[in-house]
Length: 242
Length: 219
Image 1 (cartoon, rainbow over the protein chains, first blue to last red):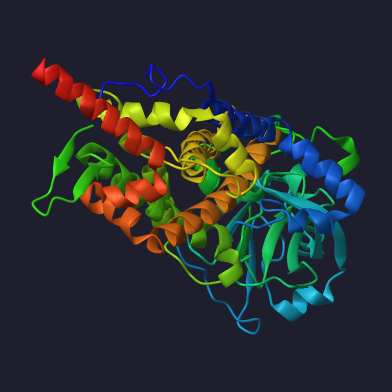
Image 2: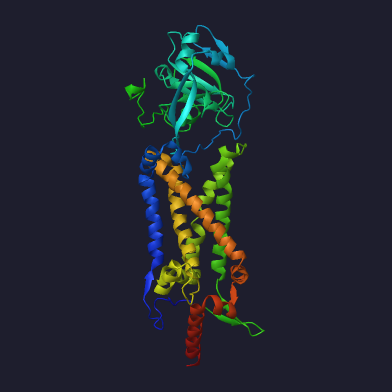
């Protein structure tokens, strides 16, 4: 008899407990707590046990590789060229050797994706974008810098002020090794104070321009100034970073 | 629940009606697509292979958004009687069932239609559908949430994904090693001898309701 509930059956008087509802709610509450406090918990665990610990946890310290085109451009070290053009005194094409001959900057900073995942304590090495701009000589009419990718799809932009921040680099080493193909190698941008989408991969060109040209992700709705603290102001809100 | 007599006079009991079987296989299909697409999305950087990532993402997204449909559709409406009854069955546990689960199946139990392990599996899958749906939606429409909550949602989505893989693989292992129970999710019925061994309490219940039905029809 389909309409009969086992609970209501008078011939089964034994007490029944709604375990199902409780366990169901338990899992749901765990999920909600994880959403609310999971980030802080990961931070605390990372501080206590070192950053390596977070890598052992599912969900922690894992790069999720995004590609706009669905493939990763393959550029050899030897064939790599970085074309610096636009409102500059000396348009230049840089090779890997040229880049490596320039003053080296390295630091360890987190990679934070706008969608939520983060990889802590990533070691970065490369050339300050500011040094490259100085090297080519920025003309007075310049306002912003645009970036192109070897994938012929992604573009990015920074204001001149943003481009001169000391933790905005043209990176050729990441995680203690040359930047791999899926991470945007051999050379990518790394904009430390902003969300990951600003750190354009497979960097092919730097154009100094007279206005901010919103990049691929900005045209798709992301803030042009992707500051990590969520502000959309035109300048870096944290003076410590400059 | 009706009891039908096969020509060979062995008693058959209906364990899953058509609606439940359809709901199970629709749900299973969605889970498989989600799990299958989750692997490259999660391990993409690990394998370092080139993937049509956008396509995989879209499949994962739309499959995920329809994840609750089989269960919801099979529960509502006049066709959902057996489904609703089984939800109540899965919800309410006797003390014996709780003890059986605590002792990992070592205590004596005259099992219900589903044993406590099977009930727990269903509860977990039900809860995980809700959790994955909510956290997955947060990852898709992240703009409405602060970054710390996006990170939390990522963590929860990942941990539940790991649990789901463990539970689903366990479910499949149990299914293929218990042939008669497996048959019932294809054909619907189990034999009386199977019910005697694996679902004694349910069998008695079915007999009582059958007896009542007989009394009603005769009286």
